[in-house]
Image (cartoon, rainbow over all chains, first blue to last red; front, side, top):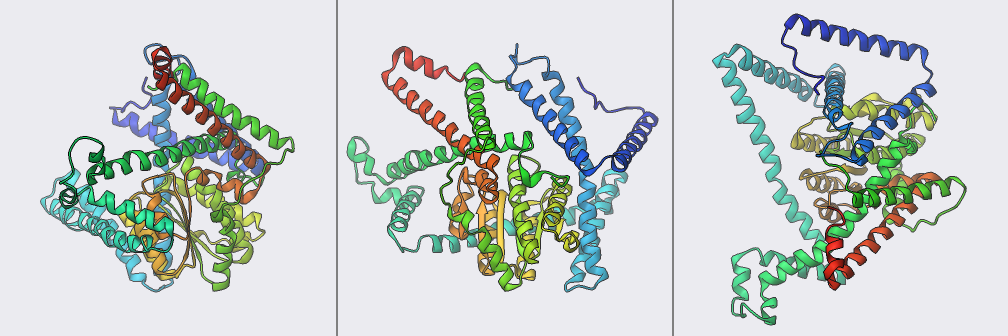
Length: 264
Length: 255
């Protein structure tokens, strides 16, 4: 079942878009005019409960061949949510524009960076559209230069700075100030040595079989990762899963005070 | 589509039942004890530090989109903004996802209203920054350096940018409180931040700071859920050790 099938007829598509926008504006305007803040809050609560109820019911109801009577509706509901999410994107753009236009208008420190943001945004959007629809060679070159030649390298440069941050964080973390730090540093050294040929070479004289083989650095490293580390990860994972269920319940039943709108 | 098997349904409904039971007990007036967790105790101190220094607070929900992780971050943000508003401190909230922007803005406005300072709310303090991971990270780092923020909250979904944010935050001398459900990023936060919410502490934060009986009840419910899982794990260990039919039962319990 697909309620968001692409419409082939351009006239019908345009009519549907205009009707949807007008309908949405009309409904929102009426709600804004006639609903009190408390009523709006109740409406949000009801919609939240219904949405959560649909997904939980679909998950828990017995399924034959992986389907129950609600399963065909999962995709359309997901599509509807994606469409609603897409409507939020312009809001983000408007927010960005408001902040940076304010910087330019008030000539705040570094206002020219805000100007550069708009120039970059327009250049990227225009070159991408012209490249996609008009197939202009110049647009393609500009887009390639901006995207592959500037945007991707900038991202990679940010990613590569992580190496330096890891060194500085590790320096602080492994300063031997107490017993726990000594244990952590010892474990870290063994794990790191277990990942490199030099570490394996250090204990290569130990036998490959038997109890003593457990003392080979790669086996010690493996033991730290699969026993000590994994047990803690699983314990944290259990806690997170239950915490997630509790939080989801609080949101679903609108018990989370900080998120209740409407002046409750 | 994934559907619950009988075992999964029983387990999930047991945990949900335990949480709801505790919430109803709390609503009935039963008081629950919460152990002291350093990260929660210092939230007010961290806000106080920003007040003393006369500098803003930075709150980043990382790469969170609409979901349970973001809702928890939002609940803590609501508290932080309300307290900051009472003392007249700005809270800068750069966002990664545009779909969470209206909700975040509304929650911040509501927090200012609750503090009785709605006229001081500045809409340009809550803004969409970028939905590219490293563009977002460099943008937040820029804010830290330009605004000389005194306190940082990193609460939400984080990936590789966690250490960039936390290390840069450390370099500007800010007090940093972090929390994330991502176990891969926790070590970075522990190494670079002053206080870190580990594991389910992240989901307990809003209950801790607000002391709302219902939320505290849900924390108690989480503990009951953990007891259920612990008993199940112990039974599984014993069953698998004994072998035979017991082992087969446990192997097929959640299939």
